[in-house]
Length: 190
Image 1 (cartoon, one colour):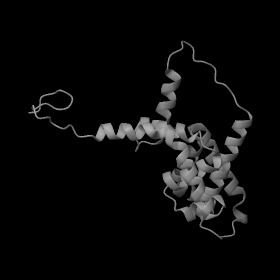
Image 2 (image 1 turned 60 degrees about the vertical axis):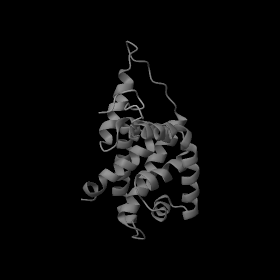
Image 3 (image 1 turned 90 degrees about the vertical axis):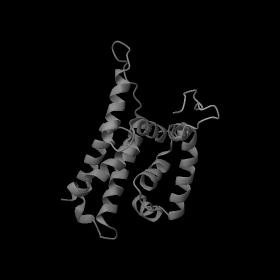
Image 4 (image 1 turned 30 degrees about the horizontal axis):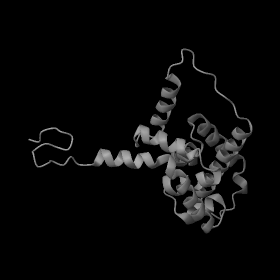
């Protein structure tokens, strides 16, 4: 029952923390096994949701640490086409169907540039909607630490996602007619 109730949010936390669907699935599986094995140690000091999220965050951060110590370089695709990039894009698009595919890919890619502590704080607060206090409980740190990690993380993300703001402005900008009856793009207004 707990798995059914919480799996989507746990998956989302792991996916946004790790940026890889397969790694996220493994992290959630590791976390749920750990929770099952250690269920007797749950003291009830916090909500079960907070406890489970903390285990998922820890499992995700452990995977990041292991990945960073054992860096691998993927082999190039046979034929040299962009099939690998398409598979990655398709995987992220299906993992988060409510967001635009390109934005999701850009944000997940940008999150990889952050230190793991800042990434975990931003995922919980900005992407999962946790309050700063809840995120502090999940990560086991002070409220001020979450605030500073989020502020520093947002500042570090800005260069990587600034183009999204510009793209959003151009997509939402209304076309203004000029005095001659044409729009700014040169198309005649009717």
